[in-house]
Image (cartoon, rainbow, N blue to C red):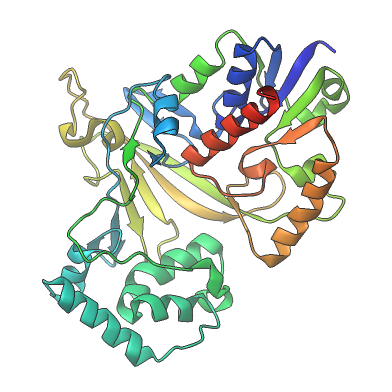
Amino acid sequence: MKYDYLIVGSGLFGSIFAYEATKRGNKCLVIDKRSHIAGNIYTENIDGINVHKYGAHIFHTSNKDVWDYIQQFAEFNRYTNSPVARYKNELYNMPFNMNTFNKLWGVVTPAEAKAKIEEEKKAAGITEPKNLEEQAISLVGKTIYEKLVKGYTEKQWGKRATELPSFIINRLPVRLIYDNNYFNDKYQGIPIGGYTQIIEKMLDGIEVRLNCDFFENREELENIANKIIFTGPIDKYYNYQFGELEYRSLRFETEELDIDNYQGNAVVNYTEYEIPYTRIIEHKHFEYGQTLGKLPEGKALNKTIITREYPDKWIQGKEPYYTMNDEKNTNLYAKYKALADKDSRIIFGGRLGQYKYFDMDKVILEALNCAKKEFDK
């Protein structure tokens, strides 16, 4: 065997494992089917703007160890995620908070907002929600549901809310304070200079092969290393022998505009069903914030780059973004995991290998725990 570890995928999980393995004296080969490293956190600098090529990635965590770990590889700014929801040219703050309730009903105190929500919940009279629509209305009432939940959710999942199971929305955060910070986590920010640099530093000195599809070179690659770290789809690895796991995909439409500032915020959600995209991302606001059309050194940047994000039906060949963790798919994944647990030569990691949607901090934690289990015996 030429390598100790073959790592399939150069996203966060694979790159952290490669970094930790190499640090301990192991020889690794990292492969990726794409033409670049960094997986879905890849950022590309276009005309001075770091563009999130696979959707907005906002780092947030309450785990200080994870926060300290990732900061080895980049300096983070103090970006606070404060998305705006747009419904028929009305603008609302997210998450649902006192600013939202004031705009919806004219209420000004938490007691008034709470009373209004309870009034709508009582009027709906839903005691046993049978679908997502009934579940959402039973949690926040009809007004919030119809303006800020219904259309967005139906676009995201590709089904009407009455056809979706209630468990998809176990809770909807209602904040009776004037606070537009979307995340509750203690630590939050965006790496200054983009995410790609983080992976570049992790993989420094490690052999990387791009445009290398594991499945097209499987015979050679399976016999090149003692162990395999696999961050691709677990069902595909096992040739779909139990059936195909389901996902939702995304399609991105990116446009460069000759203006300083398109929408005044990094993320604007479009919550009405008739508009086909779920959100528009204006990338410069992630890093430049209130400086708007200026670079940190003061150089004018009279351009902006926006990306419209369209939910998409997933079929083989498209990028799988969101796992469909309903009962059917959870049971199917359990069969694949049982196979994997019997094979000591392979470790599955990341959202596709573990069939679970992870935020970035959770991927880091999973990768570090995996490395610890593998090496600190």
